[in-house]
Image 1 (cartoon, rainbow, N blue to C red):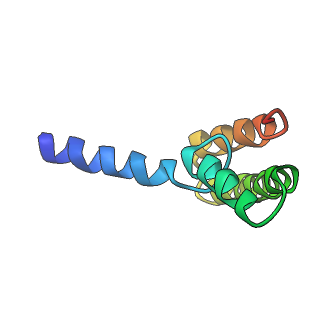
Image 2 (cartoon, rainbow, N blue to C red; image 1 turned 180 degrees about the vertical axis):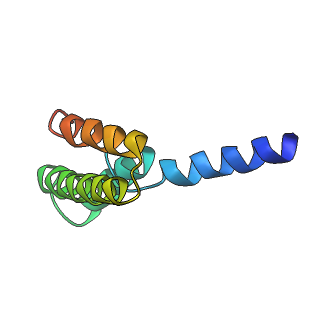
Length: 84
């Protein structure tokens, strides 16, 4: 039982590191990019990456018929517009 919970926790942690906003990976990317470029440009780039990943994962969800993946990626795509 605890082994299963361990693997689920690791999977959620790895998923959370995907560089898509509003996940932690997207916030890490957005905080590292201004070391070389402006903060505005960093936010724009991380938003574009988020949209690309949301569309890609949504298409994958359609191919494997995963309704949860489709709905979560649509929500991610719509929320990426509101990230300041």
